[in-house]
Each structure stands twice: as structure tokens, then as C-alpha cells.
Image (cartoon, rainbow, N blue to C red; front, side):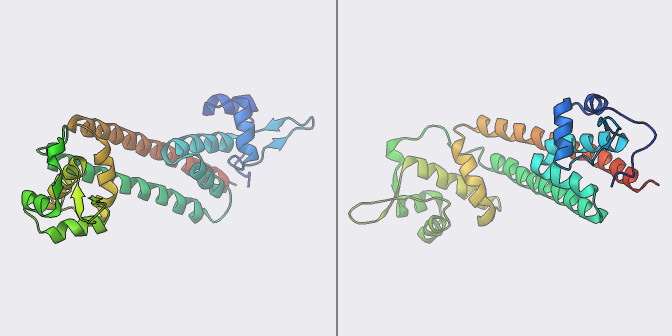
Amino acid sequence: MVSGLQSGVLRTVDVARRAGYSVQQIRDLEHDGVLPPATRTATGHRRYGEIHVQSALAYRAFAAGAGPAEARRIVRAAHRPPVSRALALLDAAHARLHTERAELRQAKQAAEAIGGEPIEDVRASDAMSVSELAAALGVRPSTLRHWDAEQLVVPDRDPVRGARRYTPAQVRDARIVHQLRQAGYRIEPLRALVPELRRARRPEEIIAALAARDTEVETRSRALLEGAAALNAVLALSSAP
């Protein structure tokens, strides 16, 4: 519906300037249903209103906060009843970001938990059997087998006997997993976290990566906030007499 068109009539270039897009991008957004259909003059020129500006601003912010595909879904839904559909999509975007924040908080705690572990240089002599590594960590061999089954620390196998043999890198992973388990981490969150920690060669790399991700989450959260304000304006204009 385009009932939100008010007395102020805008050209395509006016909407583009206010939304920070090009004229062609505004036309593309209208074609995609992100902007409601513009009215036309007798000569075929598009006529826009404030609802189009706010729709473009909402899309721009949501694209930064939740991605272009999700931004299209949210703003398109705002142009069609019921309003609850658009609000539900927005709630879901916030929920996903909340989950990312929780996972990031866990990752920060993990970085602290492994702070005392030797995660830089490993030596060939660090390779161990199941019993040797279990004794070094102070755990039962069955614990290491469980980590293997859960894909946390998967050792190599002796090609002849089939016995588990932990390479230096796998010993490093086992030390990290042991520290995280002692810090209270459950198996399922660890399964997602360990590959990230495995890619980091030094503690400062882990800390820098987490700090960058923290900044990204905050930026996306602010974008969702901006998008919500524009979306609220769209809904108000849509329901205006």
C-alpha cells in the first residue's frame, strides 16, 4: 500500500540523496519490492514520498545489521499486512545477534581459560599415545576417546596397529580442550569453538580476532537500531489516512 504518500512529492534523485543510494539503486529497490510502487505523472515520471525514503533507510540499515537478503524480507513485509510479520522478522534478526553476542562472550572466556597453555611452538617429541597424554593431562584415557568421538580432538592412527597417536598439534588441541572443560564448557559449544582456536597460532591473535568480532557485533547492533527507527516510520506512514 502507498497510502503513506504525503503532500511532499519527491523525485527519484531526491530519495537517492536522502538515502545515500544512486538513482539506479532506488529504482532497483522499488523493483524488488523494498520500496512500495511509486505513483506516476502523466508523462511517466516517478513520484515518491517520505515512505519511500524511510523504506530505503530501513533497508540500508538492516542490510548492514542482518545482511541484504534479510533486509529485503523485513522491509517488504512492512508494506503488506499483517504488521506482525515484519516485527517477527526483526525480532528474529535481534535474536540471532544476541546469540552471536553470547558465543562471543564464551569465546572471550575461552581465551582467558587457555591463557596459560603453550599454544605457540610444538616439538616432534610432544607426540603421545592415549595413555601418555591422559597421564599428562590428568584425565582418564576414556575421556580422550570421548573427545575423539565428539570430534573435539581427533588423533592419528597407527597404520599397522590402529592405535591412537597424538601429533604435537593434537596434543596442543587436547591441552586447550582440557582447560576449557575445566572452565565449565560443555561439549556442544566446544565443538564449534575449537576450530576457531585451532586456527590461531598465538594468544594475541585470538584476542585480536575476538576484539574485531566484538566491534563488528556492536556495529551491526547499532545498524539494527537505526533500521528499527526507520521501519517504525514506514509503518506509521503506511497506516496514515
